Amino acid sequence: MRQALLIFNKEFKDYFVSPIAYIVIAIFLAFAGWLFFSTFFLYDQAELRRFFDMLPFLLALLVPIITMRLFAEELNVGSYELLLTLPVTSRDIIVGKFLAAVAFVAALLLPTLLYAVCIGWIGDLDWGVVIGGYIGALLLGAAYAAIGLFTSALTRNQIIACIAAIVICVALAIVDQMLFFFPPLVLDVVTHLSANAHFGNIAKGIVDSRDLLYFLSIAFLGLYATHLAMEDR
Amino acid sequence: MIHVEGLTKYYGDICAVDHIDLDIRRGEIVGLLGPNGAGKTTTLRMLTGYFTPSAGQITIKDVAMDDNPLAIKHLIGYLPESAPLYQSMLVYDYLDHVARIRGLKGDERPKRLQELADLCGLRGIMHKPIATLSKGLKQRVGLAHAMMSDPEILILDEPTSGLDPNQIVEIREIIRHIGTEKTVILSTHILSEAEATCGRIVIINKGRIIVDGTTQALTAGREQAGRIHIGLMGTDAQNARPLLGGVTGVREVDAAGESDGIARLTVTCQPGTDARADLYAAIKSTDWILVEMTRETKTLETLFGELTREF
Image (cartoon, rainbow over all chains, first blue to last red; front, side, top):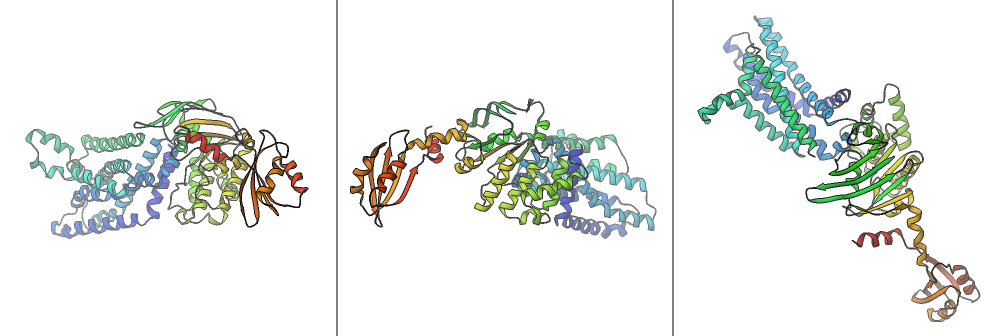
């Protein structure tokens, strides 16, 4: 575990050494702020629901940009060889990198707490829903990060890793709006696969163990697939 | 110290390493030699635990690789070919990161980094990003990485490839220095390098060991070629032949041509004899001027060529 923390530390710092962190955060805040506040006053409700509603799609586009380099870069440069011959296990490496990506998602969401503070100041905000929403957002970010980590472990090319992860994450995010493409028989299954539906519940303030289980199992599956992909090398 | 038995690695259908057996004792500097694609890097990667062998056993200090790879990783310092380091980090940050992973605590870390900076000549570059370093400097940072925890075994994959001659001498100096107390395994395709640094040479070709012996044993036989090249002024080759042919121990004298007034001859001696002193005495008794006399040695290069072409 100590080793995983050391790797987490290095990876998390690495984000802020390169400009990519600042670019991703800037894009996220600009889009989230604009999309949210452009309609906020029209609805005239002191709630963050509309902000949370767009997170599944927005994070599906941004989290893969954060995770794409985690393995692909190491495989491309060859530094993975050095890393793995240090006294660490591949599990330490995967957990460390995953936690770094999740921490980055947290850093991404942190400034948006200001929205909540502002809204709570001018209106009557239900903080329980907000806290639930942020927990859900972190879980969502973790699930996406695990998917991104997996695609990053498959290739040496960061662009391919990023696009593959975006495809999977966006598919999970919007699948519940594409239900008319599916035969009635599998509708139920497809609805349950949707990140949007599960996240929507949490964002409404309903913390259901099924939704938690959904995100945790996606994250676990992603990490396990990453493990298999790295073992295979 | 290191015991390898039946080590085999397949990439799909291609057999990169084919049943290698190897025993390496503490304090040896072993040179792993072979042409490109012989299986050197694959062998080293299996020794470091980076690759899992398709078959065979690696035991280091009585610990089997399969049982406890982590314990073995603690014993080994490894420098892969061309030192693939994290490009965006500063040298100091990188080495500090490695030191932490290696389990160096508190005060030990800066102290060890200082020692390594001195040993590997990194003093001036500790605060530069790795991406901006030249190849030779990166190699030295890689060496510092490998030696971080003062490991008992050091594995270096082509440590001098791509370096300029001065850097090569420096790196060899460092390796020889380390080799006095540690076990070092290095791979190279430059024979003179193996000869200069290693006490023992293992030549592999197409995944198999074809020669395993001390450097001395490998190079000892080579002087028996017994050919001496002589360059003379003041005479021509035809005149010189009868005189040199009459010297004891000489079997044959061939004219090897003439240029710039120097007659060149090749003298073949009887096996096991060295006729240089007698040849000199014979030439001294004439008024010819001896401008050249070299004994041809069967170099490791020729030995290597013979061995690796056979198959």
